Image 1 (cartoon, rainbow, N blue to C red):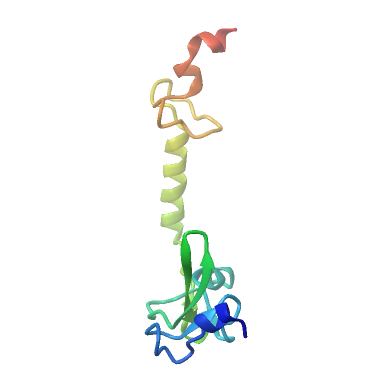
Image 2 (tube, one colour):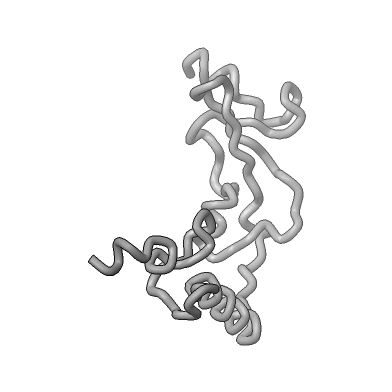
Length: 124
Protein backbone atom coordinates (compact mmCIF):
# COMPACT_ATOMS: atom_id res chain seq x y z
CA UNK A 1 0.00 0.00 0.00
CA UNK A 2 1.47 3.34 -1.01
CA UNK A 3 1.69 6.29 1.32
CA UNK A 4 -1.14 8.13 -0.45
CA UNK A 5 -3.46 5.14 -0.19
CA UNK A 6 -2.53 4.61 3.45
CA UNK A 7 -3.40 8.25 4.24
CA UNK A 8 -6.97 7.73 2.97
CA UNK A 9 -7.55 4.21 4.34
CA UNK A 10 -9.79 4.34 7.41
CA UNK A 11 -12.36 1.52 7.17
CA UNK A 12 -13.54 1.88 10.77
CA UNK A 13 -13.97 5.68 10.62
CA UNK A 14 -11.64 6.51 13.53
CA UNK A 15 -9.74 9.23 11.65
CA UNK A 16 -12.38 10.82 9.38
CA UNK A 17 -15.59 10.02 11.27
CA UNK A 18 -17.02 7.72 8.61
CA UNK A 19 -15.41 4.77 6.81
CA UNK A 20 -12.94 6.17 4.30
CA UNK A 21 -11.26 4.49 1.35
CA UNK A 22 -8.84 5.52 -1.39
CA UNK A 23 -9.72 5.97 -5.07
CA UNK A 24 -11.14 2.66 -6.37
CA UNK A 25 -10.56 1.07 -2.98
CA UNK A 26 -14.12 0.88 -1.67
CA UNK A 27 -15.50 -2.61 -1.02
CA UNK A 28 -18.46 -3.94 -2.99
CA UNK A 29 -21.88 -2.91 -1.74
CA UNK A 30 -21.19 0.83 -1.82
CA UNK A 31 -21.98 3.19 -4.69
CA UNK A 32 -22.00 6.92 -5.44
CA UNK A 33 -25.17 8.78 -6.41
CA UNK A 34 -24.22 8.57 -10.08
CA UNK A 35 -23.57 4.85 -9.85
CA UNK A 36 -26.92 4.35 -8.15
CA UNK A 37 -28.67 6.44 -10.82
CA UNK A 38 -27.02 4.41 -13.58
CA UNK A 39 -28.47 1.29 -11.95
CA UNK A 40 -31.95 2.84 -11.71
CA UNK A 41 -31.69 3.44 -7.96
CA UNK A 42 -31.63 6.39 -5.56
CA UNK A 43 -30.27 6.73 -1.99
CA UNK A 44 -33.80 6.87 -0.61
CA UNK A 45 -33.09 9.02 2.44
CA UNK A 46 -30.28 6.91 3.86
CA UNK A 47 -27.30 8.69 5.42
CA UNK A 48 -23.85 8.72 3.83
CA UNK A 49 -22.32 5.33 4.62
CA UNK A 50 -18.69 5.92 3.56
CA UNK A 51 -16.49 8.17 1.46
CA UNK A 52 -13.68 7.95 -1.05
CA UNK A 53 -10.86 10.49 -0.78
CA UNK A 54 -8.19 11.27 -3.34
CA UNK A 55 -5.77 14.04 -4.23
CA UNK A 56 -7.12 16.20 -6.99
CA UNK A 57 -6.90 19.66 -8.45
CA UNK A 58 -7.25 22.14 -5.61
CA UNK A 59 -6.61 19.66 -2.80
CA UNK A 60 -8.30 16.59 -1.44
CA UNK A 61 -11.45 15.53 -3.26
CA UNK A 62 -14.27 13.43 -1.82
CA UNK A 63 -17.01 11.20 -3.19
CA UNK A 64 -19.72 10.03 -0.83
CA UNK A 65 -20.90 6.44 -0.89
CA UNK A 66 -24.28 4.91 -0.10
CA UNK A 67 -25.21 1.32 0.64
CA UNK A 68 -26.65 -0.43 -2.39
CA UNK A 69 -28.79 -2.80 -0.31
CA UNK A 70 -30.65 0.15 1.27
CA UNK A 71 -31.16 2.01 -2.03
CA UNK A 72 -34.65 2.33 -3.48
CA UNK A 73 -35.91 2.33 -7.04
CA UNK A 74 -36.01 5.65 -8.87
CA UNK A 75 -39.38 7.32 -8.98
CA UNK A 76 -40.97 7.80 -12.38
CA UNK A 77 -42.92 10.85 -13.46
CA UNK A 78 -46.69 10.59 -13.63
CA UNK A 79 -48.47 11.25 -16.93
CA UNK A 80 -49.62 14.64 -15.60
CA UNK A 81 -46.05 15.57 -14.68
CA UNK A 82 -44.80 14.53 -18.14
CA UNK A 83 -47.52 16.64 -19.77
CA UNK A 84 -46.55 19.65 -17.64
CA UNK A 85 -42.88 19.23 -18.59
CA UNK A 86 -43.84 19.05 -22.28
CA UNK A 87 -45.86 22.27 -21.99
CA UNK A 88 -43.03 24.04 -20.18
CA UNK A 89 -40.51 23.03 -22.83
CA UNK A 90 -42.88 24.15 -25.60
CA UNK A 91 -43.24 27.52 -23.86
CA UNK A 92 -39.46 27.93 -23.94
CA UNK A 93 -39.55 27.51 -27.74
CA UNK A 94 -42.45 29.93 -28.31
CA UNK A 95 -41.48 33.50 -29.20
CA UNK A 96 -43.43 36.07 -27.15
CA UNK A 97 -43.26 38.62 -30.01
CA UNK A 98 -44.39 36.64 -33.08
CA UNK A 99 -45.97 33.67 -31.20
CA UNK A 100 -44.27 31.11 -33.46
CA UNK A 101 -42.95 27.89 -32.03
CA UNK A 102 -39.30 27.60 -33.01
CA UNK A 103 -37.11 24.50 -33.26
CA UNK A 104 -34.73 25.97 -30.66
CA UNK A 105 -35.10 27.46 -27.20
CA UNK A 106 -35.60 31.23 -27.23
CA UNK A 107 -32.41 32.87 -25.88
CA UNK A 108 -33.11 34.49 -22.52
CA UNK A 109 -30.58 37.19 -23.31
CA UNK A 110 -32.68 38.35 -26.27
CA UNK A 111 -36.16 37.56 -24.96
CA UNK A 112 -37.41 36.73 -28.45
CA UNK A 113 -36.56 34.53 -31.41
CA UNK A 114 -33.63 35.34 -33.68
CA UNK A 115 -35.90 36.46 -36.53
CA UNK A 116 -37.58 39.05 -34.27
CA UNK A 117 -34.34 40.12 -32.61
CA UNK A 118 -32.45 40.64 -35.88
CA UNK A 119 -35.07 41.38 -38.60
CA UNK A 120 -32.62 43.04 -41.01
CA UNK A 121 -30.47 39.89 -41.24
CA UNK A 122 -33.49 37.69 -41.91
CA UNK A 123 -34.55 39.71 -45.00
CA UNK A 124 -31.20 39.25 -46.79
